Image 1 (tube, rainbow, N blue to C red):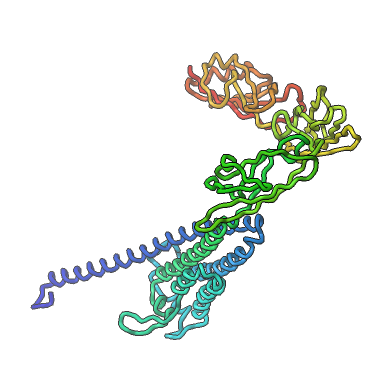
Image 2 (image 1 turned 30 degrees about the horizontal axis):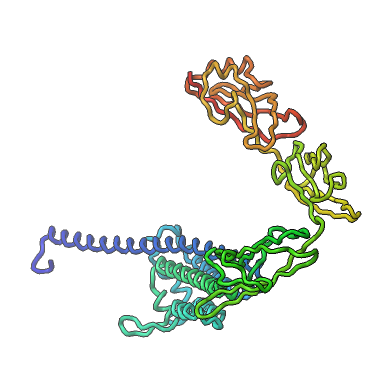
Length: 518
């Protein structure tokens, strides 16, 4: 293009060609900036999910500590240290990223984040580091060395330590021209703002990944130890807590893990080896004479073959043989709850104690006739639980007592009905005119009759009409006749009371929507 004398037209063409090349380069630069921005957004979304997973893990580990503190408290202490290191470093990066994005008008417009001035001025003075740059390196080192220090005594996690030291290394770097640059200079000096922002988000992703790997590896190691049969306990589970003189003791022995794939190779109880059919998957059945009155022991051992050795798990438990009952039987005839607004039927008795020697007391509880039959009305009882105390007098004059708690619940929300139908229904206009508006309690254990004393009636385009009673009045019928075919009318704000207890305030009755078919 530069040979010979060019005409003005050719010069113009050449100039336009150069401008076109420059525009292509500019567009490519914007595409790269957008790509960095999209990558940053994806990493941020992934980091949020990882944060939630790690929080769930820590919550689960805290529950394990509550259940088995001696076993899981040391593990939880290590996990807390790792979590603190991760949160501190992540918080520092989040604050730094906030300062970076504050330098642009729109943090979501990645194409304007093409300048490197913010970090260049924050981290460097010429080729030297400013205190802020050294702080950035110190935060990386604090996390890297902190993780290594927490895990230094755990031989199973040394691969993770090596990976963390590699991912968060800040040693000098040799560039492609053979020049040695500081790590911070090599990675952050002169880069577009969006590229540096994405790198810091990637650092946060590495933090989350490290935390997840450490926590999951810790738990996996603990579960591996627990999976060994040497950590199982044999538990005797009797069919009941006490047995009468002359009865056979009946129960079973299960392993603490209750693994259905496990079956004992040999079980010895009270000096006798149990027959083959007594040993089943995950449990061993027991059936032998209970013995005379008093405290009795069950001693023996489980034997499992594991590899080339036999694992022996001791069995030790006890049970009581008693000549008289020592516990009460208290049950709700309807459910394990009592309801406000109704008389709840109860059956209360002491096994082996005659009804005339049994007394029960609780707020709202009264005898209703019949052996062990009571009625309980908790409408005025405050709180969400009520305790029933039971006392019994045995033939020898001694007394036994027991107590049980029941939950108190309100009567559920009634459902409005038209002609016995609820929800959204279809009906002819003349049928609706003569239908009865009602209310019912779906799936409720008590057969309660509800009386409707009024409701509101709404036809589209017409004023809402207040109706007394359970049928449409003349105004409602007149409005209904103006409704178009296929339109929906509403019956709502239904006023209902329990027929036998009008003072009880029911929850708001659900409405009914009727589509007119003519």
